[in-house]
Image 1 (cartoon, one colour):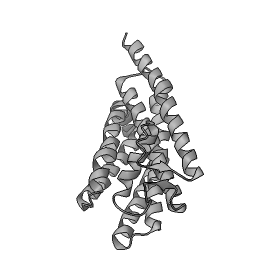
Image 2 (cartoon, rainbow, N blue to C red):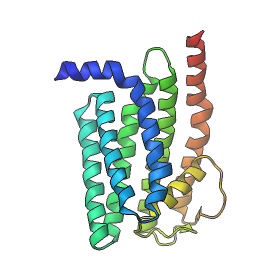
Image 3 (cartoon, rainbow, N blue to C red):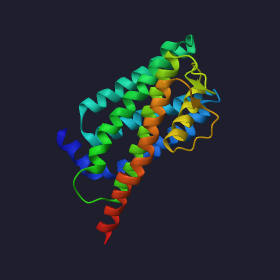
Image 4 (cartoon, one colour):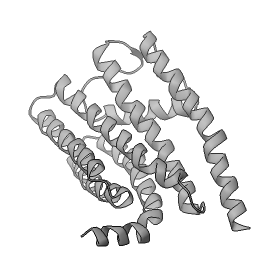
Length: 224
């Protein structure tokens, strides 16, 4: 069994960085907006993609701890989904936020060594760095949810209430903050919310300008 996992890691570890990037991008930018329409079919797609995400994380890391953490996040999200169907409340909202936080943190823990570890930098490593960038936004989505659910009117233009459309709105706000786009339709009001936005904005500026740019340089040098 261990030999099989080792062979899978050697063969698929790098391509999986690209595959997981595409998968997470689809979940964030396709499934979440469609889920906001309230169609249950797209929630089922999200569940299916989450299972693939867990399998990919396990192959890349070979860590049972990472797999268990991702499974725990999936269970939390499933329970939250069932509670939402029965009676929407602040509990399932926080369960969803906890699931996203565990997912994002586990992905960052698994992907970072795979991207920035020793060895030749390839195209897949650069795409993996993009995956890490997306993961930063996911982590802040969960943190914004916790703050918004605990502090009423922490954000102007965004009501943090349990609904299928909330995830899409928070993803939108997180990425406009990470990329410092700042359209102004949603903005933080409470000091804690503002502090989190400042922190995400700093990550969003420094990460592409330092780590991601360095990886691109190393990949070009390795190609030569």
